[in-house]
Image 1 (cartoon, rainbow, N blue to C red):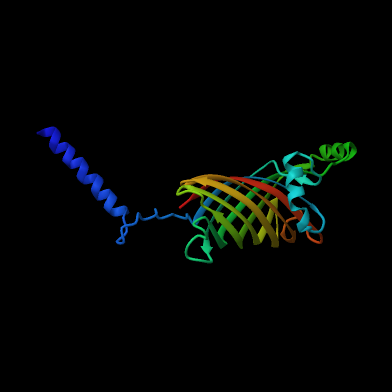
Image 2 (image 1 turned 180 degrees about the vertical axis):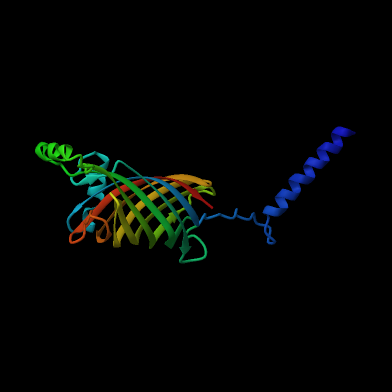
Length: 243
């Protein structure tokens, strides 16, 4: 009797589940696909900067050179960044239940890079500084901090209910700061990013190239990098959370 009751109970649960999946016209309803539109990235940042003009077409080559340690200019020791944003779809339902075309927007993107500036003093100058008990050194840490907004088109592909593949290109207006040796330099910078990510469920990974330029202004201190345009280029590899 107990076995029969258990069998009837399981049968009721199965029928209820089937009824929920069945449309009013008797057809089986397709599962609702959840396109995860919000994202939060925790990134490792590798970049360099040097004097020169921006060339958007060289972005991927620049990032590749940094990856292969084939760089000119000053390369950072390490860098991290945090980015939060979302995708605004241009249509309600995915095209062919697969593709969503949208606009990515991020109002929070902060990046930090640590550099070692080597002024390359001659041995003669170093000896003179030591004789005068000077605290001036030809090597010191330089800190670069960027706060950005991001906006640009994206294509999101959802081949399953949990798998999400996204590609994007964004314009990132930025306020960039250089801090070191008691000095502060900063100004507006025009940056661009392009990349791709793959996520399963709520977690994923991605990589993007990042490039732009800034003509800094000196606000305080003796370290003055104003007067020339500094070109920034690099890549970010990130862990992504989507919801």
